[in-house]
Image (cartoon, rainbow, N blue to C red; front, side, top):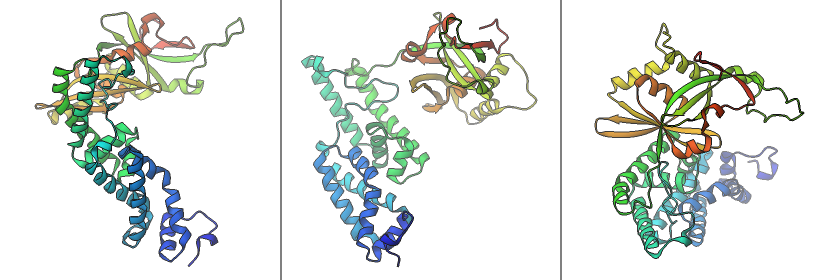
Length: 379
């Protein structure tokens, strides 16, 4: 058998497992070094106590080494190792829950964090309320089904992406999204009524502003350099990409404020065709989605644009099936298209409006020349 030192290319996990089982003493160390960082992040997410992490780390390596022959798929050594660590961490957490991470910072996307930014300014009464609320959150997290609890911890506590959480837990991406959604809904059900009654000052519903589609515009070209030699701010996309872009202007109903959302050519044109009442020979995607919602007896209650992160807007569809309300993550361009066709209100979080909103006549970036797609006067 080829030894580790004789390999020219980096060995795969499958090859390292085979070498280890064949007696190569360096192979197992190489396997662990390869997965050291993700394993450490997993344990940090599950067990914030350093000594507990070290205990589980050592036990994980020992069990992996002693049971390596039982690994059915050597190519999946990483997933197998993470599952061992996950099971040991669950046991440790259940036995010593008081050592687990504080849940002060856990919050749903539509609520502010429970813990204030500067707890030193809390009064003794507010501090007691906060402590009681934090303990209630910890109890609620502990009561979640294990699969949902672990997914919620990784996504909200350690701020891993759904894809990273899926890798750590050895589950599919869709399964992780379902677990996080279900866990969040369970927490909302358990905690919402209690916090709304007993600690309104700690959990605040974000203020929403109703908006309408004021216009859809397209960037024609970049503005030339000013005559005084000053160069205008550089736009976010090059000239050759401009024909493929559209901008939706969403205006507050009760104020002269609006904000722009850049969307793709298809989404912007589908929205413009609907607003201009232009008929198409065959049903397009959004008409199809509307029909599917009707067939599934689902009602779109409203669309909420609730977050802006790294220049990307995030929105939810609020759907009702019978007595059940469900929130579904959705691109704003798709959400607004559906809202228009179904005649439902569109809301934007006040925080988003404050970040991106402006007076209507000052909304568009002056680095471009604009043209209305809805045949309105020049924007």
